[in-house]
Length: 497
Image (cartoon, rainbow, N blue to C red; front, side, top):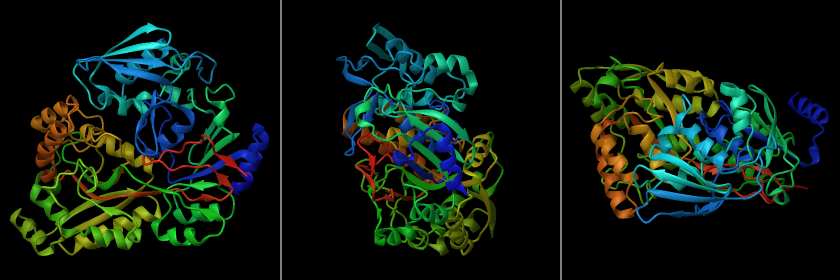
């Protein structure tokens, strides 16, 4: 049914399906506005739609994209960026210095912007000439280039943004290799090749269609049947099948992100629940879990267990807080010390088989230590809305990860962080994380992050469980595809044969 729908849509739009890639997504993205978006799958779609000032290479070096050069002042309070000449948005309007100024100010000031805290230190943007902007910072800000290599650096058409207002995300206009055609919620997002793209010679595909298919088995079956060319986040239990398939390839890259349990402490106000009020209860929950069992039972041992925002292999990992082993007796004792025999709570998980299975394993492990968990399987974008509104107790969710450690930590733990959905607030942690943003020396930054994590990790408002490995199964006639550690799909040099 879905394949018939897609083919008829291609005929209707005049796309060449011989050179159109159909991508199976794990869930449907939220709004397609880079300043308001929160989802990983949204970032996947944006990579085709919206070029950024900077990008990353496969080995995590920051490289120019819409920019061609940059220079910091001696005091690191000013950043001058030279822009690529002759770039236009999908509506034909120029991407010049004034457009960049508009975008950065929009990211800071748009109501509800999730980028505001990411570039909080950006004080002003000056248009030097048509292809030059100067960013003035309130203090040195080490992650600024990394932020501009992500959604804060994505450029949207000022003309289209002003005309559409709050509806911009329904029909985004950017400056990427593909332009928006249509979106049908929970069904498809259709993009077509933008002929006036600044790097058009590297884009050989005629279109990209993103199809949200939450069931990993259905997603894989569509790939095997030829109804999809590529899927993201296959079930680890299916990897051996994919490896043995004669017509499939399985490129992989290590993830920058994490997965865990986010616990509501005080969103939008302090909760009067055992988990929210007692650090002992939260410690008991962590000790009730066995990360290795979770990895083996749910993910066939394909992932990396962890207990911090960065994996144990990261130079930013705090070795003073190693991964704790499961200790059911200690967990029961902690519950009793906190005044409870058993503790009940609701765990919200995604409405896909893998997330439900993960919830069931957590439910069984924690049950042996005195926790009675009710699972609440919820469509992912809806679950994000519920989390933002504080209508949850515990949410199994993660973060796709960022190049700079600030991107995995700051907005989750600072009192006013855009993604602080737990209500955690420690002014000393705010001070340490803000200072870490202003320090260029790696050893000094590491010391600040260690000091901050020594305060927030024992609080356990987020219990980190594992770090994914990124897999991108695709048909073997899709040639030239390269996996990136940020999980985004880049189509430069990719062909369908």
